Image (cartoon, rainbow, N blue to C red):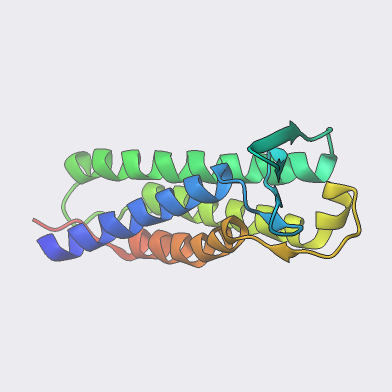
Length: 159
């Protein structure tokens, strides 16, 4: 039982770390070896990184909001899990924890999907480029968050 609990907590922490890294790191889009773009700024490498913040774009703000909401929901979920772990009656299910984790998964999916569809309008450029690893980490966090949320909903508290 302790191994199951440890595995669930590790999965949740891994999701939270993936969400944090994918939101903070400056690699959602590559325009080349010297230019990267994230949700917050556009950076170019000359002798050092020169970063400029974006102008306001509704689609970018939606992606930013969804990623921040996913972090908040996942963080609240882990706090609620520990609260429910000590207060929930035996045989009870972790519905509240699972709901918040499922909401985190849906928010990250929504944010990454908006970015996928609207990245050209977000960056106001039609140049070719590739998705960066932070974007990929967001898509990896999505199924892990959904699986974690489902596990919490199914999980019963034992003695």
